[in-house]
Length: 335
Image 1: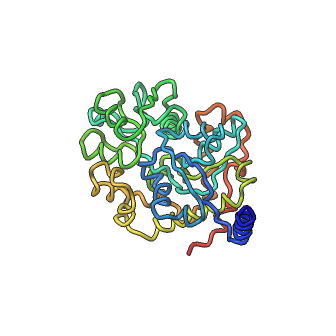
Image 2: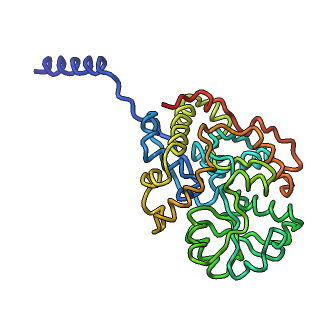
Image 3: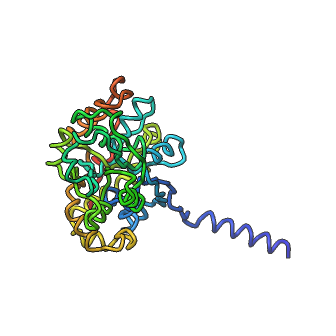
């Protein structure tokens, strides 16, 4: 009996050795600086379309209200990548930390500076920011960077206006309604909710390339997938898989209507108004880059913007070549 059991055990081991190995999907964690924001739509869309799985990746998406908190998680090594604004790569390099954009989602911020309707007749431009309290997602966030630049570039020093961290979505809207902020920088679908509800008006629109060039002096690459430079170099195969999935997603956005894209997203992202969501996305699709490639003129514009008010950036020599890479997008073949 013992000999029989032994033979069965040996046989089972032999069969196990001959059977093809079953590989589990490679696990990764990405943090998104506001999952419901349309500017970061490629992250959730890639998941919903199954493009991560298609590449053999098991990607967990974690929602974080502010990009500045997301970058802290990346630097701490608790996540492998962040879906957030490219400008953090420059800000962090000035502080001795190296991260880079691997896939560039957009060439404009996709952000809007809104002003409360109670002040709409008095505030006509950033020159009127003096004495105002303006909402941003977080202190040190990209919305904070852009708001400060708009003020400084129109003669208002950062000390003459107040930035208040109020997040996005419902918390931003509540801050406007309660008078805690006079206006602020936010994105869709929050913009449409505020305007349609009569609570705010658009002051500065940074969604289209034309308006971005007008207010910021050039294209301003924003939403991206950024990762630590050292991690990218030591995990090239994984980074390529992620890049394949995201570039395919950007191609999907470019070749499908706003209504078709909206149909793929969670219904709670519509904030109860699907029609407004579709309309906003139809106008906002122009922000996305179909092939995920960084526009050459973009990084110098971002550096110029940050250097105008951020003393840490202005006082350091920034190597822009280390803030992004096109190695992986160049290797993608969209099918």
